[in-house]
Amino acid sequence: MKNQKGFSFPTPFDLALVLSIISIVWAVVLTKPGDDRFLSYLWQVLVYWKDGFWGLLEFTLQMVLILVFGHALAISKPVSGVLDQIATGVKSNTHAVMITGTSTLLAGYLNWGFGLILGAILARRIGEQAALKQLKINYPLVAASGYLGMLVWHGGFSGSAPLKVAEKGHFLEGEIGVIPVSETILSAFNFQVNFWLILALLVGLWFLSKKKYVYKPMGELKEKKAEFRGEDMLGLVVGAVICVLAIGEFWFSAKLSFDFISLNYVNFSLLGLGLMLHRSIKNYVGAIELAMKGATGIVLQFPFYAGILGVFRSSGLLVMIAGFFVEISTPESFPVLTFFSATLINFFVPSGGGQWAVQGPVIVEAASQMGLSVPKMVMVMAYGDQLTNMLQPFWALPLLAITGVAPKDLLRYTLCFFLLGLCVLLLAIKWGF
Image 1 (cartoon, one colour):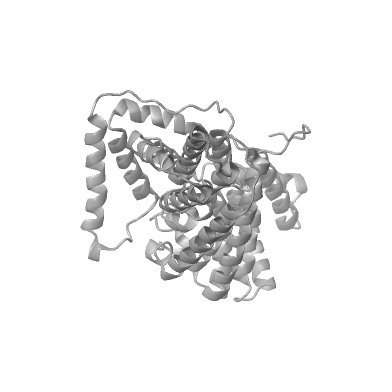
Image 2 (image 1 turned 90 degrees about the vertical axis):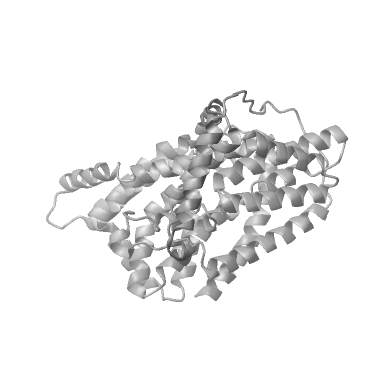
């Protein structure tokens, strides 16, 4: 990525490579036994990295599917039709901003891939309708409102970290066991945090929509609507069967609880819904092909995060870092420190799943030593990760492409969302512990 002066910004993949090098150097410098030669121990650390490289293949595919299935759902004909109707009914700038922000927050809470694409498409549809009606709206603010789902997603129903620890056989099961979603996503603590966060964001949107702005008509966009022409009904039938199975798992679960929900369950449900709404297998395959472009970063980066995790674990660096946090923290300060470290790490590891793979083991080790609630600490990391999505450009790229808004115009408003979210989440963490 380049700015207007030609300066090349590092890509997320560049940062994954840099983090890999840093982890290897740290391991060699900090954990090398005194009687080992430097080159021989460097080779051993590189072997740790290589051995860990494919350790998160299942997790990688889960992250790819949750984005791809959510994206495919967002561009289905029924969802697109609803978005067109919403856009047609917009009558003012405040209406445009509030309807986009509310829709995106709800969609992002359900699924981050669905919310990310739905928000971008809705913002664009509203911009197109405003241009046709010659209705003056703050289009960059509308587009920024379409990105708000990424500020609530990790505390929602597709949150990578809480869903991963709810799975049997997850990579930290030996340390913390299986943590059901009733203690994380569906906990009273998380619901209260999200209620106040969403309320604050909606109030902030209302105030921003009332401020004076320089009106700029929506420019010509190259992006076209996805067109699907499949006529078979097989997708509807297969999707209905999958949805019945998904509903049946809840209905026949013990006491109608939600403890069975995991990444695999969410992906299974998204697949069924997508097939039902596209109706045609041909349509759905076309939607998946479009959505796969957005998963490139996950496919490339996750093996490197797994390699970093292999270095941290096998070299003893993980225990050393966790011990450092225990030494400089108290049970009262560690949640806040974890929150801020999660916001920082998200700049370098822009995937919530990848961040949990790198930061999760340290959090679990330190929290266990301090006697802190591990489910709450999972959510603290999730809040930090989602907050700096408002400043991290990686996931904004699809929205920028669809809406045609310049990055600097988007950042002007997402910075406001970041500050609002920072205040709410810090207060929530202090209150929760």
